Amino acid sequence: MKKILIVGGENICQGGIQNFNANWIKNAPEEYKFTLYTLGSIIDKEFYKKMRKCADIIALDINKKKKISRYMEFTFNFSRLLKKVHFDVLHVNVGNVVVALLATKIAFDRKIPMRITYAHGAWDENKKLRKILFYFGRKYLQSKTTRCVACSIEAGRKLYGEKIEYSKKWKKHLNTIETEKYIYNNDVRIEYRKKLSIKEDHIILGCVGRLDRNKNQEHAIRVLKKVKDYIYPEVILLLIGVGERKFFLEEKAKELGINASVIFLGYSNCVENWLQAMDVFLMPSISEGLPLSALEAQAAGLPCVLSDTISKETNISGLVEFASIKNIEEWVEKICLVIAKKSDRVAASESACHSGIDNSNLSAYIKELYGDL
Image (tube, rainbow, N blue to C red; front, side):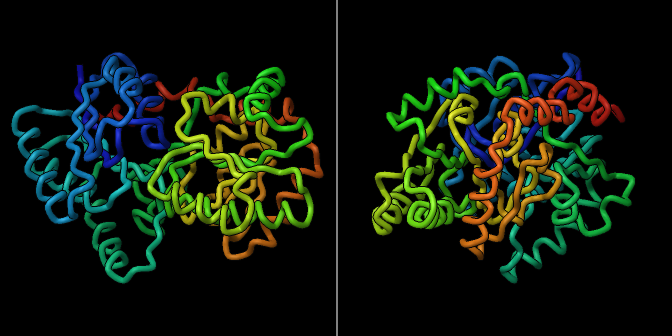
């Protein structure tokens, strides 16, 4: 039995990285024993119970602390753990570069034989301090890790440098999902649209993700206003997710006079069913890697309009349009374009589900990734 330590900064609840972890651990060969180590808190007790069945979980609950004290506490606790327990693999899901650097250094000093960093996103480097951190962080991660993994080439280049794909340490892993959950089902579509108490001819635009600055739901609300005023009056926006920006987004919808057309669904444990109810999936994120929610939407046969900051590798169905978050008119145009096409959702769903995103090969990939042991 080989011990794998997965490190991240996220809370224990439904979410992109969290679902990736659950999917990864669930499909891993039985020869691996996982410990999930996070700076976050246990938010969703049901999700926690599900994860506890397949992994040990250590949640430090320190994300709300100031950065310096947070990193000091992480360093102390992480060092103490590695002194007590020997792990064969360190697997860092890089959402926070500082955490990745600290975890990798400590693991290197403690002589953990395999040290993997996994880039899930493409970060915004506009701030000068962040640029400096990235410059030195890239070099350190490349020198101290044994595998540099990313969900897309773009995400890999952002974290490790422009020439990372030529490194022997480089490995790309296209995110995978449990496709059978998302296959288009018209009966489910009818059932879940009824739950919203809307007319049959309403168009539903949908976003799935934490209500935060990076996911940029404010842009989707502004786009909704334009679509509603000039083209499709019977259109609503369905926002699935929780987060600190909810009140701000509610006020923005009121300010624009469209609050009755924006539905805040909150947390949902059946996102796959709500995707059936939507007509167009929107993702106006400021930065992403290869987002699972966009793959899930395509598996449900949904046409998508995504921010052009998102990797083009996300388009697995041929039904994805990319638009600049600096240009609302472009978003309106692309949304109207995909609505007018009236694509066959059954065919689109089947095409996406057979594009290589299914979990069927995940076990073999994990074994190959950890195989150098």
